[in-house]
Structures are given as structure tokens and as C-alpha cells.
Image (cartoon, rainbow, N blue to C red; front, side, top):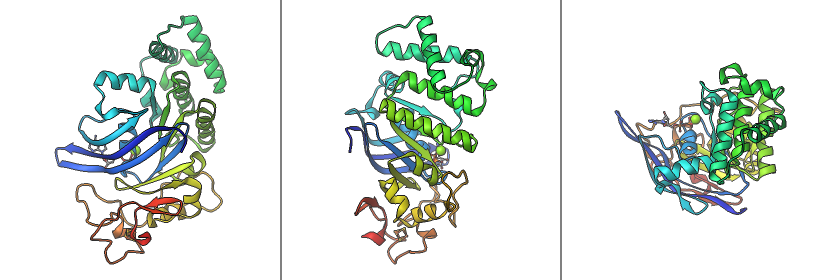
Length: 324
Ligand SMILES: Nc1ncnc2c1ncn2[C@@H]1O[C@H](COP(=O)(O)OP(=O)(O)O)[C@@H](O)[C@H]1O
Ligand code: SF4
Ligand SMILES: [Mg+2]
């Protein structure tokens, strides 16, 4: 492990709803090294975005959060609202599935990037002049190969393409230089070529600035090209965790095996949804035993009665009785 940046211990999250309270993350443990790239993969509703939001200090108001998340040694779950606001602007930055959610629809791009420079300056107790800020912003946009940056700055978010909006969001990250960037399905709205360019940009942020990156995706093929380590979520539980390359080469958990088998041969990037027979588990009617048992072809006698914990096997951890 490189220098430790984040240490998540026993993170559990439940949502309070009018239908009752249900748990969507269960005792999740994960350490993130400074400069590390980790992918979080799982089907829809497995809890990926919940993990991203909580880590980014954006806990939904109806969430009950337990455990601890130490960021640079401080537990962000105990931060006051003021400290959280500062944390969000300085240490962590989140890119959403719909990039437009990261931008303000009624302000032009210059306005928003200038504001970003101001936020960065405030935390460093400096104040760039408007001229200097403009020069910096244009340099960043040029570096991101956005043609005609002057004209882009005058436009509003809805006047840009999906790929351009994602680059503006990346520009914000380049200006803020957070220690951790969380990208939640950031390429879903992009076509395949732009998708590849975007993933290259994320890697550049990682290699040039040493930013740690959490890449959230439902597509294990994208995870493969984006990260050193892979965390597989199923029904709010980590079910496999290890080096991405090792897991893709030799998945162990029956669910991960299904995910890897669904990557079409010879395809590096796919944007399909994974399809494993059966449906994801329901949070409203939790199952006893292993949450994957109704869909598992390798089910053992005890699987529907007792839930396995994480088991250390060779180069990774797996939640499955087959490896006891
Ligand atoms: N604020 C919320 N209140 C109630 N339920 C929520 C809330 N946010 C997400 N959920 C539910 O929690 C589960 C996990 O959601 P999410 O973390 O968005 O999963 P994913 O990103 O893997 O699709 C889903 O069933 C979703 O409908
Ligand atoms: S614990 Fe049992 S049901 Fe669950 S994945 Fe392993 S073999 Fe299948
Ligand atoms: Mg999501």
C-alpha cells in the first residue's frame, strides 16, 4: 500500500423511507492509498453511488451512517457542516453520472471556472486577479484539448456536448487539485471514442498530480482499463477485493465470475449492462445467508442459512463459502 489516504472501517448505511428503514451498505472496509486508482463495480442498486456520496461528504439527508471514514487521519463522519463544506471543496471532488449535475445551468462556463479558482485560492489564503484566473483557466482548457476555449467560456452548460461538459468538470478538478477524485459512472453518457479519451484524462490526473481515483462503474471491462485495485459490490456487501488484473484474469466469487464471463471476447471497452441470470437482491426483503445464493450455480448446503464473512485467499479477499 502506498501512503494511506483514506481508511474506511465498518461503514454501514441505511436509508429511512416512508416504507421503513433499509440497509444498503453493510460493514464495508477499504483502505485507499495516496495516488491509488480503485474501481468499484456492481449491478445497479448494489450501493455504489451511496458509497461515493458518503465518501465525498455528501450524505443524503435520510441516510443513517455508521462506522468511520478517516481521511488523512480525521473521521469525516464526525465533521461539522462547516468542516464538511471545506472538506468537499479541498480534499475530495465528485464527478457525477450526469455531468450536467456538476454544473450550474444558469451560469456560463467562465463564471463557474472563475468561482472554482476562487474556492481554491480561498483555501490557500491567496487571491488571483481576474486576469490571472482567466489565463490559468484558458491554459487548463487548452491542456484538455478543448478547441476555442474563449468561446467555450462564454457558453452555458446546455450549449456544450456531453464530452465537453465532462472536460469542464475535469478542468474543475485540475484547478482544485483534490487528493481524491470520485467518478460515478462518468462515461455512461459518452460515446465510445469520447469515453476512451475521458478515461485517459482520469489517468493523467492520477499520474501528473498523484490524485487518488475511485472509478465507479457497472461495467467490469471499464474497471479493467481504469484501476489497479478492484472492489466488487453485491447487495451492499463487498464480495471480492484485490488487484484488478488478478481478479479479471481469475475471478473467484461466483458473481464476479459471471461479471467477467459477460465481457465479450476481444472487447476492451463495452457499455452494455451486465446480465447474470436472476435479479439483484431486494433491500426491503433481505435474504438470510449469502445474498447471492438464489442466483448461484455453486450453492452449498449452508449458503442460504449463514452469510460468509470476507475470507483472505491467496492474493485477495472473497466473501464465499467455497474458499473457507
Ligand atoms: N436517498 C435515498 N433514499 C432511499 N433510498 C435510496 C436513496 N439513495 C439510494 N437509494 C436506494 O439505495 C439502493 C442503492 O442505491 P445506489 O447507491 O444508488 O446504488 P448504485 O449506484 O449501485 O445503483 C437502491 O435501492 C436505491 O434505490
Ligand atoms: S457463499 Fe455459497 S451461494 Fe454464496 S456465492 Fe459462495 S457458493 Fe454461492
Ligand atoms: Mg449509481
